[in-house]
Image 1 (cartoon, rainbow, N blue to C red):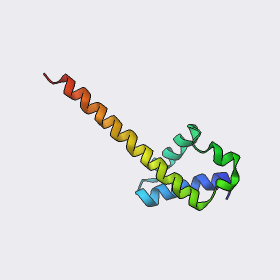
Image 2: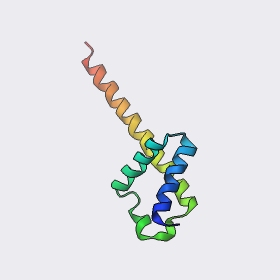
Image 3: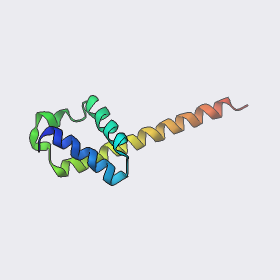
Length: 84
């Protein structure tokens, strides 16, 4: 599949596997693309497979979850420091 089709597949998988709405899935893929997560896929077209798309969708979602958990913990620490 072509690179653009691959990105569409990752986006679709995010909506199907994790019930993200289209806007959130698109943003996640666009942010990953901006961070050059997919640069190898662009250089090596053989990586643009359905199997790899599923792996990448899982990775992107897990990274998103990890970032959210880290932010939540940081906010909790800040709140605890402010309490007398």
